[in-house]
Length: 182
Image (tube, rainbow, N blue to C red; front, side, top):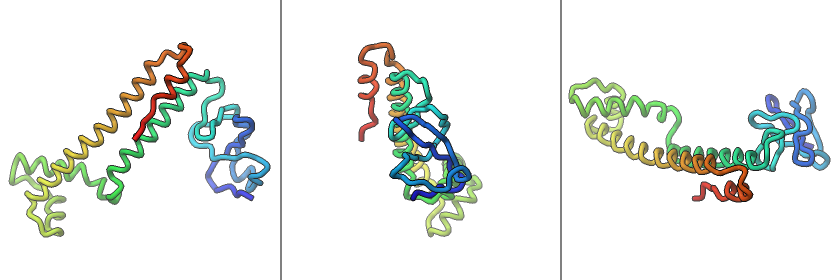
């Protein structure tokens, strides 16, 4: 028996369509062998199509539905690639990056600039604050280049999808050919 989690909405899928939406208050547990149930992520309505991965609005023409699914897959791949850039760092440290960069750029322009965060980090690491500022600028520039490449790739693929003529007889195959890849 599967058990519903508190605060989660579920969709019962019958024949690839959302048949029923429910929460734990409606149905606390069910037999996975007798009904197909998935978590309803995002805006999901009864009658929407479920392709095993994504929910598509009911009545969406097939090529349009494929394009929406393609955009969703590209966005997910882009998000994963961007997350990989920061995976080795704690969230709170990542939150300090804009201030670290501001202070590092300020110090580059004015050696007497107040840099409280960089001073504290440099002191804790036993580094000269100017050396730390140089490292911060270098990492910041490298991150901008790497994230910019990922963002640009996502936008380029989205442009390709948007340019496909949905009335073309091969629209579905054109859409399916647009992939993130490795």
